[in-house]
Image (cartoon, rainbow, N blue to C red):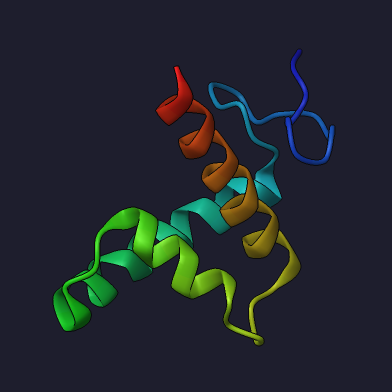
Length: 77
């Protein structure tokens, strides 16, 4: 049994995230295809743009922050 690294709820089977953050990630990825097509942005730029959206829900905001921090950390190593 593992915990979601964002909120420490129980992770879903086969994922590192809880059901709420997993759903937020799924929706975020689905919306990225539309943004990429319309604006020609890459994943990191998309995350930055989405994060600045005021209407963003809490779970999406948390997953964007988590993904951004992981990307930043991977650039340092």
